[in-house]
Length: 140
Image (cartoon, rainbow, N blue to C red):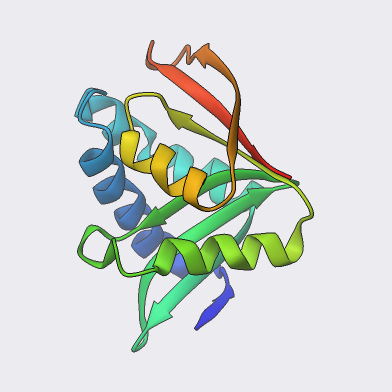
């Protein structure tokens, strides 16, 4: 089931975000991710329209939208590769005509996922927070 985010989900979502971020971004120091936990809960989740995916009453992933921008799509590591990310993208596409997302260039798995989901690379930039190159991708 995919449902709307509730404030009571915060701790679970921050854990999923952190665990998935560490796994997918071994090229970014783990201290960066640890320093962002508070921002996820206090800044980013409240500003976004977020949907969570539950399996048997357990949250296993979520997607956060800020207008037509995917602010985050994260799936708990033990549930990755099971179609959950695709379900969350499908939900977002049902709500928005066009979507954009930013992924790290070194996160090849995310690039492949978004390309498979109909996204195209439109630009790249150096992300000031990490110094890493990120790609902007868009689904039309």
